Image (cartoon, rainbow, N blue to C red):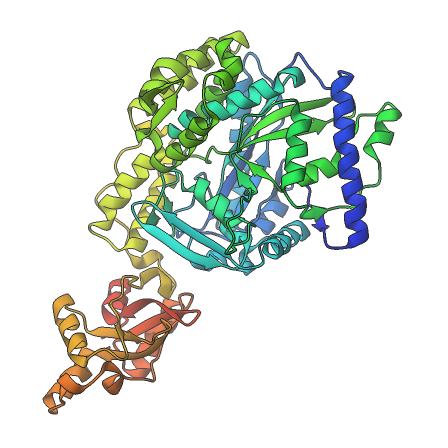
Length: 625
């Protein structure tokens, strides 16, 4: 998430100063490009590894701050949520055994994190979206307590003017309103960096855009969010909507999202991309900057362009242009942000080699890809890949071709050529790119997750299915198997031994009636669906009562005229309820004390589920007589 020493851009004097530094940084970058002061003739690779921390019960573990302190390594840093951390890998020159070296470094860091996390009863998991994240872990208290994240949240909510709306439709549908940017914390990625020559930046960037669809299509592994089966790579839709600052109005306005694939082919230089971003997006964050970049340049020093990097850090292109500087040199690079974390280290390194090989293997015709493809086709390919993964059909240079055929017949040979051109060890190229080939004809992470989740749901409750999925992700990940080798989850799913909250065991598909419905409707509904408890809602969708089969039977036995009675006339108005975060150990005595057979589960005055004696008995058969 960038430099932590930032604040919201509300203070006028700070904002004015920051904007002046930002404008000077752009001028400075243009001068450096004109004078040939940006490093050329060398390629480096780098990466950022985000990962999840889970408990022994396979749920998010919110002690990242303590674990980070114990790790005590500058390569590690916080992420937005208290159950995520990030590793920043040192850059390596793109040649020889660079991918093997990076893989070795990554394994060393993850082993270190795993060892230290285990001492605090936490475990490391690589996955694009953790299946067991629930609405509970998306509350503000789970946000990492750092000024940058608080400022970012305040400014994005302020820019939007309202809470954030999330609406993603796949096989299932997810629609909810959220009060912070923490929904973004569901996403974990493996961000890949490639240094390019400044004179070739625009051509390289446009090519990176062109290959995004097919590359993503064979790398998807995040189809589930909050128990819903959505897109093959749900991160794409989730990230855009979770921090969408665009306001909703009655007017039809063109507004550019801060999370964007782009709107057109780029031209000019990297400085022109930055100019467009400054023109299109409000300044959300600022920081005190003590040195002026133009003055630094005049004195012969390499400027860091701090203001430009802060602003660029609040704009989330899936292929992001980046400027970097050391004491002795400056460079530009492309950051690939759309690849998910996991499912394994070797899968990530295969993704990296595939992308870098393609970036370096493009032919003369591909250097001017904007002349051969409509940008709208490229953007459409990316969205289709996010939705449908490997099953997508790409619009590629005037023809329709499946992801599988495009990858195996055209892109993989190009990637081999690119790695060979950069003198990457042939054995390394073969080891990594053969994984992409096997995945293209076999299974992706998304396909494995969907198939097993559907299978588990046929015989278990949703929460148990998500737990089992997470358990075996962790197991197979530690067995060093690439995703195309992962077997089916065995037919012995978890039980509620790993459940602790009411929200983990509640039924979420709840049949309800309105208080002004006929009582006869409620009776028939109970008989049709073989249920003994029906919550009653008012016209605002708020729960206002409860009907049970016991007192419905009593009403009929006592001669009640059900044809002339409404639900509101016979319902129980004073209802004992729970919230999703109530522990099961608290719910059991509550039900015993009041001698009730169910607990409606309420969140923000709305019914979100119901827990019955049957649910409790499945959790622990000894708890309820």
